[in-house]
Length: 213
Length: 257
Image (cartoon, rainbow over all chains, first blue to last red):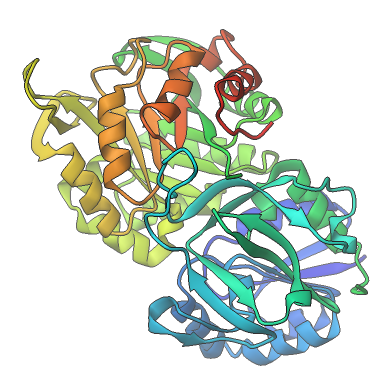
């Protein structure tokens, strides 16, 4: 039986993602854990998170999770979600500027307030709701139609330095990177655990992925 | 633009059963919340909101069980409102599988609660529910006030100012209900919806008064809402969520189909 560790570092509600992973593949052993050993032994690792980046980085350090995460990101199929994606960049402008894990060179920026769509409606921040995802070729998009809608809720977005790291974009109103991939790492800004069938499909693809791009 | 406007069916739950009253009286039984949530998910609901109207404290655990059951098989955002007064209440709902909580009167009694909740759990899961009623006489400039106790008790607080304050305190979203319209099936209070939606930078969900599908579209197009919430038109089978979305799309609104 294969296993997946969902990293628990006190940043938000992990029940949703654990339940969705279990639903996506009932055969997989899903463990919510802050234990380095569990993360080390798991076949796959999910790095979720909601909230603010300063608290996120502080918790990771306080719980001695930085090294286990870096190691997992080098070695096995690794999925970052939402704040767990943003933490993989070099730094974030949230909370006055916070250094992050630098697994994907680049920065995290905030959406501009008060932008308007073509009908004159205000584009609210957080960007909240179901938006289209324009995917580039990757095994984790298997059985997911181009331009499928996923559920987002975030005020900050990633800007990777290397264009090839960006594996999907959405528009709000300008295109921004909503998924990153390199080698065995994959990360998404949206919430697959809240994106109905397409989200469950992505999680299932991850649980069957060997980590090869 | 490609962010879809959302349709959110709302389930008023009393002692574990879905009910919907007209102006909070004359409650009709509409059925099992888990079954109804499942149906809405299949029909393409973008989120589901549960409003717990259970009066007695002893029976409040029933909503936790409802949320647990729904969350184990419905993978779209779930919001729970009604009786959320402490950080423990919020934690209990999130642990049961809710993604957001609606805070209403507890915010009016102590606005700092919203700040504490947003700091603890993140703004993304804090929805401030505002019950507003028009208080300006006909012909004068519109003014709405916050009411508590199911629309019975005025607070003297201006609704637009309150919405801005709640945003500044960390609310991630506003659920705006017109107490003049709730249960009347005569459409949203569009002037109210627009006034609040244009005043805040966070998403606004319009609620209260939906009687037909044009009302939903009007809430988006004229009320400038980011999402629309309705209860009875969906519960009693008058319309499906999908019909509502097709209708909104025909009126030029981007929806998830």
